[in-house]
Image (cartoon, rainbow, N blue to C red; front, side):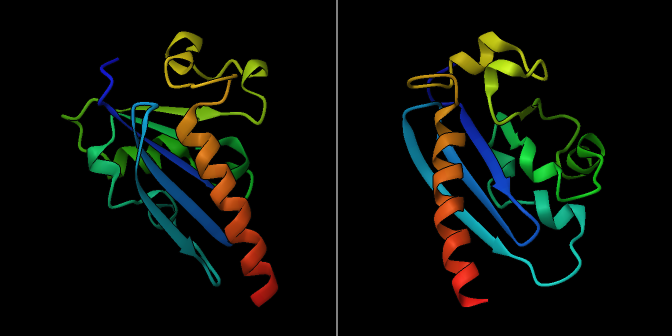
Length: 136
Protein backbone atom coordinates (compact mmCIF):
# COMPACT_ATOMS: atom_id res chain seq x y z
CA UNK A 1 0.00 0.00 0.00
CA UNK A 2 1.28 3.42 -0.90
CA UNK A 3 1.54 5.73 2.09
CA UNK A 4 -0.76 8.29 0.52
CA UNK A 5 -3.70 5.99 -0.26
CA UNK A 6 -6.79 7.27 1.49
CA UNK A 7 -8.70 5.26 4.05
CA UNK A 8 -12.30 6.11 4.96
CA UNK A 9 -13.51 4.77 8.31
CA UNK A 10 -17.26 4.78 9.03
CA UNK A 11 -18.52 4.33 12.60
CA UNK A 12 -21.92 4.91 14.16
CA UNK A 13 -25.18 3.74 15.63
CA UNK A 14 -28.85 4.37 14.91
CA UNK A 15 -28.59 8.15 15.34
CA UNK A 16 -25.02 9.28 14.68
CA UNK A 17 -22.61 8.27 11.90
CA UNK A 18 -19.02 9.52 11.81
CA UNK A 19 -16.78 9.24 8.74
CA UNK A 20 -13.05 9.96 9.00
CA UNK A 21 -10.72 10.20 6.01
CA UNK A 22 -7.08 9.34 6.62
CA UNK A 23 -4.14 9.35 4.26
CA UNK A 24 -2.76 5.89 4.93
CA UNK A 25 -2.14 5.62 8.63
CA UNK A 26 -0.30 8.89 9.06
CA UNK A 27 -2.44 11.93 8.28
CA UNK A 28 -5.93 12.87 9.37
CA UNK A 29 -7.57 14.68 6.47
CA UNK A 30 -11.30 15.12 6.95
CA UNK A 31 -14.26 14.52 9.21
CA UNK A 32 -17.96 14.16 8.46
CA UNK A 33 -20.66 13.75 11.13
CA UNK A 34 -24.30 12.92 10.39
CA UNK A 35 -27.13 12.96 12.92
CA UNK A 36 -30.32 11.14 11.91
CA UNK A 37 -33.81 11.81 13.20
CA UNK A 38 -36.11 9.02 12.08
CA UNK A 39 -35.83 6.60 9.19
CA UNK A 40 -32.47 6.15 7.53
CA UNK A 41 -31.73 4.89 4.05
CA UNK A 42 -28.59 2.89 3.30
CA UNK A 43 -27.33 5.49 0.87
CA UNK A 44 -27.55 8.11 3.62
CA UNK A 45 -25.64 5.96 6.12
CA UNK A 46 -22.74 5.05 3.84
CA UNK A 47 -22.64 8.07 1.58
CA UNK A 48 -19.78 10.42 2.19
CA UNK A 49 -18.36 13.28 0.22
CA UNK A 50 -15.00 11.53 0.73
CA UNK A 51 -16.04 8.15 -0.65
CA UNK A 52 -14.75 8.89 -4.13
CA UNK A 53 -11.28 9.61 -2.72
CA UNK A 54 -10.96 6.44 -0.64
CA UNK A 55 -9.03 3.34 -1.67
CA UNK A 56 -10.11 1.45 1.47
CA UNK A 57 -13.42 1.77 3.31
CA UNK A 58 -13.42 0.44 6.88
CA UNK A 59 -16.87 -0.10 8.36
CA UNK A 60 -17.25 -0.68 12.07
CA UNK A 61 -19.25 -3.86 12.62
CA UNK A 62 -21.24 -2.15 15.40
CA UNK A 63 -22.73 0.22 12.81
CA UNK A 64 -24.18 -2.68 10.86
CA UNK A 65 -26.02 -3.97 13.94
CA UNK A 66 -28.22 -0.85 13.89
CA UNK A 67 -29.28 -1.18 10.26
CA UNK A 68 -30.79 -3.94 8.16
CA UNK A 69 -28.50 -3.19 5.23
CA UNK A 70 -26.72 -5.36 2.70
CA UNK A 71 -23.36 -3.58 2.95
CA UNK A 72 -22.00 -4.87 -0.35
CA UNK A 73 -25.12 -3.83 -2.26
CA UNK A 74 -25.34 -0.43 -0.57
CA UNK A 75 -21.70 0.45 -1.21
CA UNK A 76 -21.60 -0.94 -4.73
CA UNK A 77 -24.43 1.44 -5.58
CA UNK A 78 -22.34 4.35 -4.29
CA UNK A 79 -18.94 3.35 -5.72
CA UNK A 80 -18.50 3.33 -9.50
CA UNK A 81 -17.53 -0.10 -10.85
CA UNK A 82 -14.38 1.16 -12.53
CA UNK A 83 -12.93 2.19 -9.15
CA UNK A 84 -11.06 -0.38 -7.14
CA UNK A 85 -12.14 0.14 -3.54
CA UNK A 86 -11.70 -2.45 -0.83
CA UNK A 87 -14.54 -2.51 1.67
CA UNK A 88 -13.59 -4.12 4.98
CA UNK A 89 -15.96 -4.74 7.88
CA UNK A 90 -13.96 -4.59 11.12
CA UNK A 91 -15.17 -6.16 14.35
CA UNK A 92 -14.76 -4.67 17.83
CA UNK A 93 -11.67 -6.78 18.47
CA UNK A 94 -9.85 -7.04 15.15
CA UNK A 95 -7.93 -10.18 16.07
CA UNK A 96 -11.19 -12.13 16.52
CA UNK A 97 -12.58 -11.29 13.09
CA UNK A 98 -11.98 -13.26 9.94
CA UNK A 99 -13.82 -10.70 7.82
CA UNK A 100 -10.72 -8.98 6.48
CA UNK A 101 -7.22 -9.77 5.19
CA UNK A 102 -5.03 -9.40 8.27
CA UNK A 103 -1.88 -8.27 6.46
CA UNK A 104 -3.68 -5.36 4.79
CA UNK A 105 -5.17 -4.16 8.06
CA UNK A 106 -1.82 -4.30 9.88
CA UNK A 107 -0.41 -1.81 7.33
CA UNK A 108 -3.11 0.68 8.39
CA UNK A 109 -2.27 0.44 12.12
CA UNK A 110 0.09 2.70 14.00
CA UNK A 111 0.06 0.54 17.12
CA UNK A 112 -2.01 -2.44 18.16
CA UNK A 113 -4.58 -4.11 15.92
CA UNK A 114 -7.00 -1.27 15.18
CA UNK A 115 -6.42 0.77 12.01
CA UNK A 116 -5.64 4.39 12.87
CA UNK A 117 -8.53 5.83 10.85
CA UNK A 118 -10.99 3.54 12.64
CA UNK A 119 -9.49 4.26 16.07
CA UNK A 120 -9.87 8.02 15.53
CA UNK A 121 -13.38 7.63 14.08
CA UNK A 122 -14.45 5.60 17.15
CA UNK A 123 -13.08 8.24 19.54
CA UNK A 124 -14.81 11.08 17.72
CA UNK A 125 -18.04 9.06 17.53
CA UNK A 126 -17.99 8.44 21.30
CA UNK A 127 -17.58 12.16 21.98
CA UNK A 128 -20.28 13.20 19.51
CA UNK A 129 -22.64 10.51 20.81
CA UNK A 130 -22.24 11.68 24.41
CA UNK A 131 -22.93 15.29 23.39
CA UNK A 132 -25.94 14.25 21.29
CA UNK A 133 -27.40 12.19 24.13
CA UNK A 134 -27.20 15.21 26.44
CA UNK A 135 -29.01 17.42 23.92
CA UNK A 136 -31.70 14.95 22.83
